[in-house]
Image (cartoon, rainbow, N blue to C red; front, side):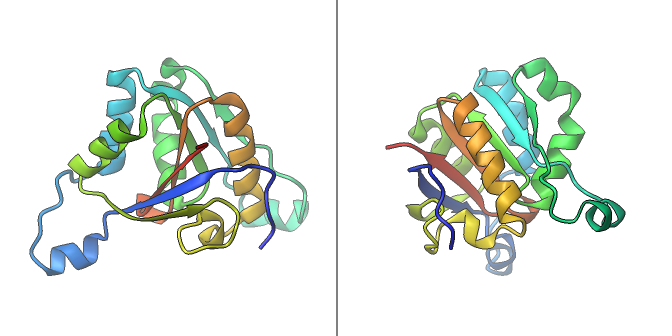
Length: 173
């Protein structure tokens, strides 16, 4: 596992929807991702969004290993305009990093309210069980997005896996 130059802690939060539904549990929000984006706007907690653009198969063939530059949003009005792209990037997994101006306990309370629970914590880019880089399909592009977001945002960073489950919260201690 390649190390990154960032010293971040990682907390994994999961809906674990299939197991919870099988046990008969209800999940609080039908669309936790949508609820999260609404909360960011309403609470004024949005700081930035950095995402890796999706590349078509043709682009991947032509460009091969050429670096993909992340896209960046830094205002709530930009977030509103790009919402469908943001949701798509979050659902595709490890393409979106959102900076959240919030304390950890406030963010945890929000995610708990919409059905997530803490699965565990670890270190970013160190290869442990709760490290999002272990599961990321395009590690270099994903880690580049995290680097950009960590320079733009002085707050918590949220990373979404496929279908926004799990969510990883990255932070400096």
